[in-house]
Length: 298
Image (cartoon, rainbow, N blue to C red):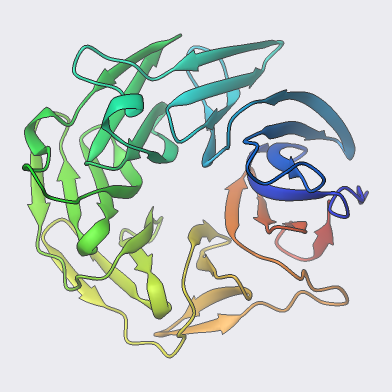
């Protein structure tokens, strides 16, 4: 079932919870762009449900697992909206070691091995350990005075193998106790990171930059795509990447465009997958892929 919401709203991001349920954030096109706001929706078994509006922008969304399985949306200032499993609430990332409101804008939230992490500028890294319980993990890696550093993304295979990436091509690894800066083959901004099921970690960025590696060994994948890569997902045994112009799959050493069939989205940006379904979220399109066919959700 297709919901014609894209004619009046701009989709920001979203997250798949399971095959028949996902969430997304949008902005009303008729509201002045200088007025920060986020509308939240759930898409359940083909039916669109409205959650609520919050007076802040959404920069990232994930499905948190503990203590409840819920949508978790993040604002640049560390404000949090949670919804699902019969409950909803608001939180703010705040710790004795600092908070985003003081230290800089947040960029990404992701659930890794059942625990939710958030990263942002000035190499901020936080972990959610319970309801409104966030702890700071970055005390040992904070930038020096005058340095402009930041994490754009995070992923991991477990609490003892987490990776972050961001400005200046930085790559870091966290083993649950200690941080290690990895030797990156680039100084370009890295916008996306994915710990894939093939045992490799992929990092991507501007002008088609794609890295592949794990721990201390990283290399550039020499492929021909020159578009900025904004997101990645591992689905159906293959790496999928999203640019502003399309979705591509990695075949060998080349990124090949996805065949959408009879209807192709006009906008692309974020990817989210779970339970055998992949979502593509663009400014005016939300499409779902079940491994065989693409279909418009909104």
